Length: 148
Image (cartoon, rainbow, N blue to C red; front, side, top):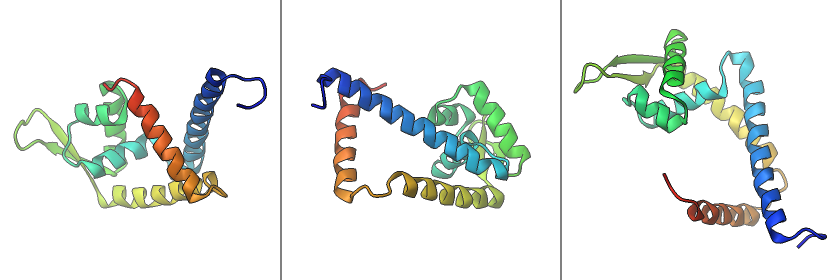
């Protein structure tokens, strides 16, 4: 225990630090992606499409934790920018599925480099054993929470 703080206070502090790190990383990502005319949310969409091509907008909205309405806006912008193409599903022609274009793949390669640079800065000086311990700890914490 550090100073006069008790365990629940330290746990709350740890949770706040995790949130601050995530928010700061999001801000850095948006700053580094802005010159390319893309946001972190748009890159997240492209990653989701690359990981699971052919998904509907509704499924992509769940993968990206955004509303279906927000997803439609993201999909429309990505299509207008030439990063994706949408076509009718082979089983249900009322569903549009998305896949990456070469321009979308190229954009993700650039975003991968941005992410690697930010992550390298984040983890600078942190030993590999500490990262492994942190992963195990965070997995335990996640496992303690009810799953949707």
